[in-house]
Image (cartoon, helix red, strand yellow):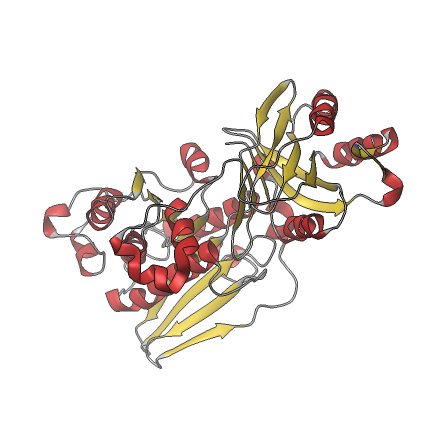
Length: 429
C-alpha cells in the first residue's frame, strides 16, 4: 500500500502542524521504495516559512519560487517531495478542499515529470487519519498510511479503523493495555527472523498476545539437537521446516492470527518484499552476517528492530545475553557493537574452515533464551501500544544468568557509518 513513513522529525513536524492555530505547510523530502507498493521514506522536513506562502480566504498557497526551490533541493539529493497540511477533526477522514484537489493535480504531475524516478506525495492529515495522493512519473495512487516509526509507532491510516470486536481472551490484557492497545496489537504485523530457541518462544508469546499477523522466516529444518530449546517441536517434527512447526504452534494458540511462513534465509528478494511493511522486526538469528543484513534492512526502510541472542562460554562458565531495541533514527546494531568488520571477518574465516560460522556447536540452554524472549515481546508491546510512554532512542540490555542480573547499557555518543549510508535510503541503498 502506498505509504509515507518517517521518524522523529516527521512526528515533530506533524505535531507542529496539528497544534497550530492556523493552516501550515509541512515540507518533507525522502528516498523511495517502489519494488512493490510505493513507499516514501521522509528523512527531513520543516514548516514552510511565512515568506514562502500566501494566505487568503481560499486557504494556503505558495509561490512558484518555492516550487522551484523544492525541485532544486529534491534533484540535488535524489529524493522525492512530500507536502502535508492539516485539517481539524479526528475519528474520520479529512476532506480535501477544492484548493487541495487543484494543488495536487498541478504539483504532483509537475514533480513526477521533472523527477520521475522517485515518488512524491501530497497529504492532508487530522488527529487520527490521512488522505492524499502519491505520484511516480505519470502514475498516481492514493496514500493509504502515514507512519511514524518511533516508540510508540503511530499510524494515520486512510480509513477509519474501529476497535476490534472484544474477545474473552483479551479481557485481562485489555485491563492493562486498554482497548486501544489491544486494537493496535490485533492490527499489527510482526516479522520474526530466526525460529530457533529464542525465536520460537517469541512467536509463542506473540500468539498469546493476539498479534494480528506474524511473518515467520527461517530456512532451517528441525533437527534432534533443536528439541532441547525450540518451543513447539516434538520428535515427530524432526525434518520439518522450523517455520511450519512454529506456524502450527501459533495457530493452536491464536486462530485469529494470520501466519505467513517463509522457508528462506535472510536476505532474499522475496523476503525484502514481504518484510518491508511490517511494524517491527524481531531478529533471533545465530550468525553475524544475517544480523548485519537485518540491521541494514531495518535502516533502509525505517523499521524498528529488536535483536536478541545469548553467548555462553564454558571455561570459566559465563552467560551474556543481549537485547537491543533499535529505533529508526537512533543507534543501530553496528553502533551497539553487535556487528563489526572484525566479527564478520571471523565468521567468514570459520565458514571457510568448514564450520557453519562461529555459532556452530555453541552451547545453548532453553531458559537462558526465555528471559530475553519475554523482554523482546514486552518491548514489542511498548512499540505497538505506547504503554511505557515516548522514546526516540535505541536501547540495550545485557543478561547475566550466572549473576542473576539484567542491566541496561548506556549507548555511546555518535553513530556509525552504516547509519549515514543506509538510513532511509529505501531501494537506493
